[in-house]
Image (cartoon, rainbow, N blue to C red; front, side, top):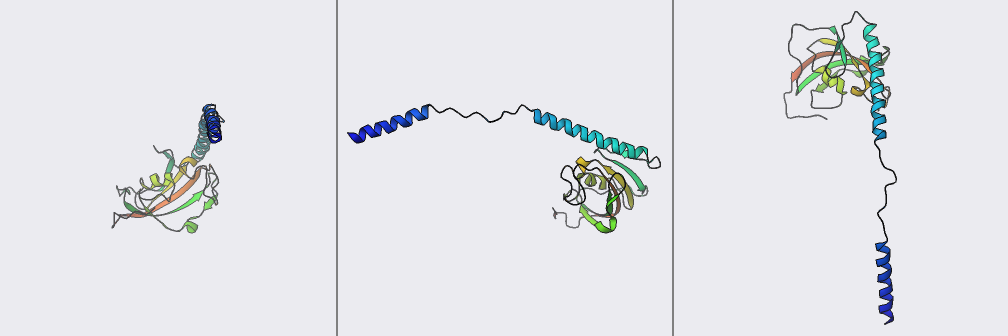
Length: 188
């Protein structure tokens, strides 16, 4: 009999304690202000970078900068009007480049970076702006690109010489490009 009373007490205790539990409320409720503030901060950042780029364009009237539909600007240093083809997805592009800040100070020299090979649209080791820029070039062209930070290294930088949110100037020479002899290969 004692065992039954103890068992009933234990079951009653569990039943009462379980029925009195309430769902915990979240510690904080998101009102969306963080996202709104982040969007505003990014809009200001883009506007500031575009003002700097606009200033470079205005201060270099000898260069004809073209606004791309992808959000960067470019000017031809050497233009190839004889060829009509540009690299396309799956081609292998051979190029050289150097990277400067918007004041013209070299961050990475062409000698330091050495000749590069890029499998067009099959790898992501280069910044978004350069991926798009290479596809508009023709063999033996040299182009200066002005990339806002969001299509360069963005907030993170490159963990070396390029800081966060740094717009960049790339000077690129497309030496050659060819069809990939092994189109199924993909490098990442």
